[in-house]
Length: 131
Length: 131
DNA sequence: CGGTATCCCTCGGGATACTG
DNA sequence: CAGTATCCCGAGGGATACCG
Image (cartoon, rainbow over all chains, first blue to last red; front, side, top):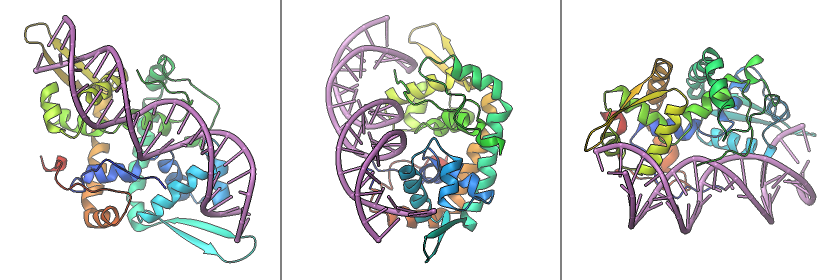
């Protein structure tokens, strides 16, 4: 289990929101779940760049924070579905805007990152927004 | 200089946006600059929880990515001002929405974090949104 | 099928002191 | 006043193998 050692302010909305949204794949997870991708395996296949472990950690966090809800069907093989809660719904337009920002400024950003020596670009991993 | 070893997809707007927005203090910096806080020292005072080094790193990244612009007055003592570029402007409504999300769900989120054993809460660091 | 355990490592970020 | 150099650290996340 991850442990945060450095305190952050729970009196700042922006900071708490950051805490909710800032995991490498959280926005992607929410985006896909919102489009109807509910099963764990499906989500993993949609985000092949992320390991199962990390997706689970982030899904657990989102669940713990009341952003998603998890439904477990007790059967064999086990079946699990994720849903977005009403609170989580409020994040969807934000995530869409963030994606749109990236799309609108696609060429500018690509130039920035391609010319950035720190960033080893991989153009072939996934095309999330192209769903 | 930080170096990213793990490639990310430059063909996904959401991913590139994440790369732009996901630094611990980037949203705060943009927020404050947008409110007219232009000087480095002022920004540092507004975000006392962050070290000067990190703020500079993140400001440099934002500048490099075309989100902010830096104006240096050659004089002594040196004077520097930061401005938001037209591209960066597009992020402001998003940042506001993220802050609003946190404010709207303030009590829910506080409960979540206060009850989270991983999170050492500090209620007294700063009140960013209260500016 | 879905979730964990373990291991390992990176990289983002904190603290401090120094330079122009 | 603004920025950098060093040093250090640990949270977060990648890879893999193992349970239910």
